[in-house]
Image 1 (tube, helix red, strand yellow):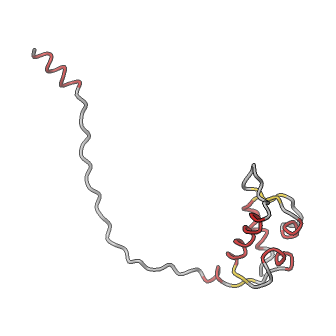
Image 2 (tube, rainbow, N blue to C red; image 1 turned 60 degrees about the vertical axis):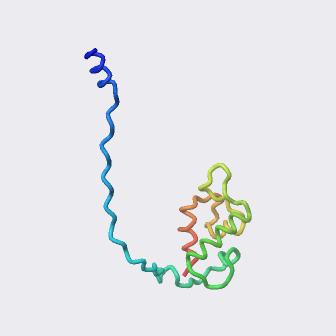
Image 3 (cartoon, one colour; image 1 turned 45 degrees about the vertical axis):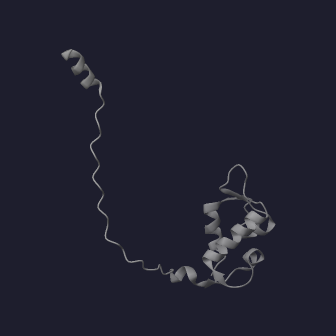
Length: 115
């Protein structure tokens, strides 16, 4: 009988060591983020880009948002390659005559139309 007890003890799985409770970090003060002034500066928009986003001087971030609204509204995003934008006539002027532009290249091309 003694051998049966030893075999039973060996087959029993070992319990994991209890995890220690993580120390709580000192509470951080909830300071509000202040926007970067460079991003909030209204930019002058070229004539080609005004056809898409309007003639009012707006910050660079808003220009990008409005271009994306235009792209979504006119269904210009490539359905297979979501990173590519298939430009219509108005966007081709902004993109320097290119018919298809990568979304990362798009911001670079748009910045050329802002001053």
